[in-house]
Image (tube, rainbow, N blue to C red; front, side, top):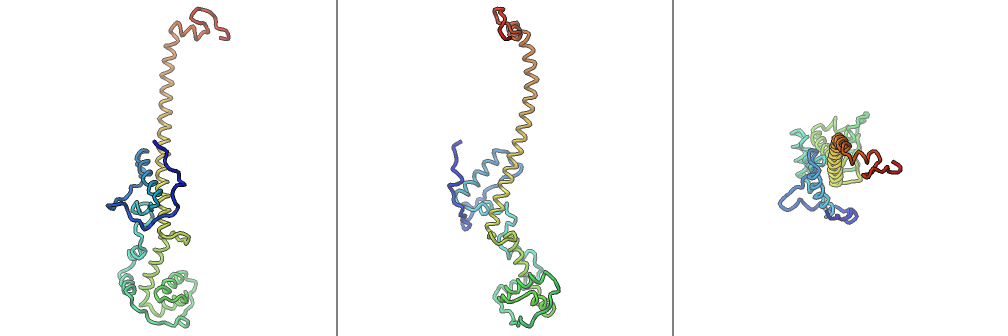
Amino acid sequence: MAQRSSKDTFSEEVNYNAGPLPGGIVLPTPEPTDDPQTTALKLRALAKAVEEGASLAVRTGYKRAVHTDRDAVMIAKQRMTPAEAAQYDIWASGVVMPAIDWKVSVKDVGGAAGFLYHAQAMRAIWKDNSITPGNAAWLHSELRAALPLVTAMAKVFAARRELTGGQEALSAMEVAELQTARKVVAIAVGNLNQASAHLGAISRDINHSRQIIQAREKALNAKMPANRQMNEGVNNEGVKIEGA
């Protein structure tokens, strides 16, 4: 097989905007049941995609990413109650939220951590970065009609955190790319290790059987006069071989 290009020949930049292959073809990823040849063929195609600057996650249809759906809202909606989804859709359509004086609409949070997430959701809903967990505590007791919307938005933010793995250094697409690369390599290496272990077992089995058969061969060879003389240190002319 010809030597393939070095890993240094491709750029670290990934084109996440490039879609799947023509015809919507999705590249297959290694499976734990694949034999070494199949694993190598799949991995070669994936490596080629990397060399071309394409996204592994996109080209494989996000099969090895934690979430196949990349839309945080769609993920969140699967977890919303009907009331939450309905209020979220109304808000998303552009409805204007009632004005609230957040400076006075405050209550003690009482150590409830959930108010932190609801405050984050309320800041997005009212487009006001001054909203605090204390305001969220007030809303819970004084404006309960808005709770489904706030909870729905909190679920959207939770889905976004899941897509980014709870960190901020990588985007959701970069996290999907990392997850895909890790999973693909882990399965391929696992298949290779399994094949190596199997080959090692076969090699030991062959060597054991070979030794038994060769012992028979050696025993029969020893019965032949020429071979017996050589084994006893005597050449074919009956002369003792020095050092034998």
